[in-house]
Amino acid sequence: MRVYVFGQLRIEDDRGNNVDITKIRSRKARELLLYFIIFHKRRIPAELLCETFWPGMEEDYARGNLQTAVSLIRRFLGKEVLTYSDATYCFDKDDEVIVDAEEFESSIVSARDCRNEEEKIVKLKRIIEGYTNDVLPEYCYEEWIVHAREHYKDLFVDVLMELIAHAEYSGSFAEVRDLSKRVLEKDFLNEQACLSYMKALAQLGQETEALRFYESFSERMEKELGVLPSQQVKDLRDELLTHRKRMIWIVTIEANSVSEAMQVLKSVLRGDDEVRIISSQKIGLFVKDVDREVAESIRKRVEKAFDGGSMQVKISLRLAR
Image 1 (cartoon, one colour):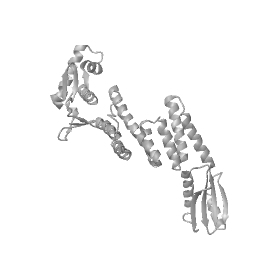
Image 2: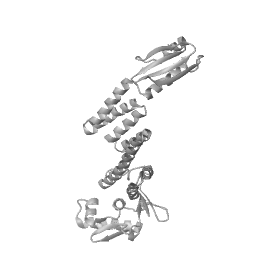
Image 3: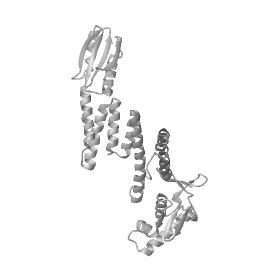
Image 4: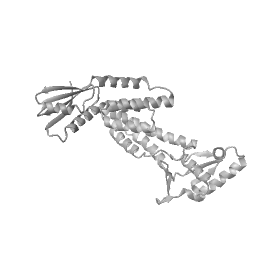
């Protein structure tokens, strides 16, 4: 039997057929089965089960309800799957049920045991690709499910952070950006992921996007925790601002008529942009205080302004030295 708890609960029998849990007519029995799945192979005291599922009820009544629910589960899955001894229940003591979340955790341990670093990274990447949803997300309130969900989510984030460190060391900044974004989707106040994400954006020439992200991250931290980002994050923001102010991009326009080209350029100029005539057939549009991404968008605007005209132009972008 296989049990899938990432995403919506799904159970398959030994032949791969889906097992419909709704055939257990008692909602309490279905929830109890989920509890046994989450605490797979652990011995659980009957007293704890009574306190969890029938809190405040007299002990005899609670135990009677527990026995009824257990009978329904056994009738559904088979008596041998759920055993009782020494006042404790155990789901799958003979190790015949495979739970995807446990496979996920054991595969991480196995990958980290690899002595070859590259082989380990390949395995870890394969593992995180299989993590497409959290544990039983439709169950929002049961504390024991929330605890399990957070446990596996933390494992997932830990692997992502390990892969981020490797990608940073390798200089694979697009990968750092994508991995950091996945961390922030699961843990949106993770400052280390925030740092990695902003640094990666800066390395990819997207300082404006990095600064924009800082503002949203800072707002979330203040709203959720009542604090501002750490000094390390703020220092990175200041460094990006300083670096951007030093940057001057030149959009070069080569045209057979400089005067006509100047007229066209007026439609795309910003207030602090500067236009210089470089030669008899070349104009330079000097753009300050922007990153590569914004400079590239300005180049495209210039290109679009000349589209459809009679002039033959050649437009390029470079960083002033």
